[in-house]
Image (cartoon, rainbow, N blue to C red; front, side, top):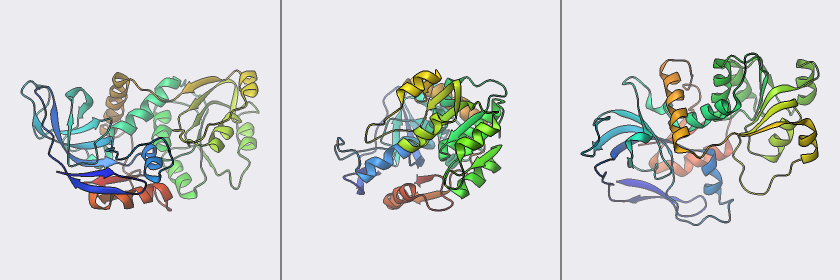
Length: 316
């Protein structure tokens, strides 16, 4: 089979590998789609000095079952599935345990069924336990921020404020249900949010950008004793926080991430069921796809984020 291996910064290389063989309790998935995750971009850029190459990554997989082990009963050859994987997804075939695969309806569009990021977004919202009419600010409305925006609306919150530097993303956020959109480049976000909330701040602030700037801004928007969720994936240099201010404000600080496979699978099931019930709109979020032979171009797109870009995927 063909597989893409990251041999160094900016250097995915296509290699030939033996097709993996499932054991009696596993399935073999023919990969159709593998999404390019923000967490992998720094690996491709070489920003993390502790990484050791080569790397066989890729974890946002959707495809079709090609083989099943002798003891697998809940899935069949030919079933379309979304798979939670911890790597090896940029390849034509992937072995998985059945528990990490969600059987999709036959008419589900595979390029939209990216189970892992959908699961992360669902679990990020679930961790916050939003109440009816809670006001929410999302700082950084990339792919998962836009999924979370929709999930908050499904949960019945009050106003959702989408904050981003890109005007095309803000327009899309509005189309997907944001009650207010604001660009920090041209507006005083803190003043806007305080005026909207009667001077208090939002009940829930979601930092979804993964940078010092988005972390700093989010903390200025949350009311006293409100919920501050760090959902962005923070890599590279250490972040600095004004702990005295956080302490005084009595924020309920929530780590938006989870590392429990069981919780991942719960979130994936919930999110994909919403997708299949037409409650979650993914059609406008996967904007670019490249064949495996052009995977470096896909990562370049994900890194540079040209106008109109939300998400790129590798196709087989």
